Length: 112
Image (cartoon, rainbow, N blue to C red):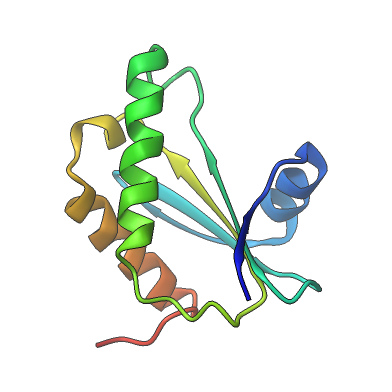
């Protein structure tokens, strides 16, 4: 199993409509079970986050935080992480903490 990225707008819209979500001050997470046999993730940052430098930093921080999680790659889920205006000012370990809380409450990873 491998991680692939979500790219099509249709997939994003479907997950926004049907998926479950968790919200925190630094991150919003949407999760939906998929029919593929792989884990797919998508990261979105709107222009409300800031100019290009802040949006890119937010994406980098989210990617770094996700890489530190011990998530089971054999699950078939679509996950979308949405950056908020506060995300670019956070460290990756803070975003990882938010991410871990979200994924535990959504049932993707087990509580330590």
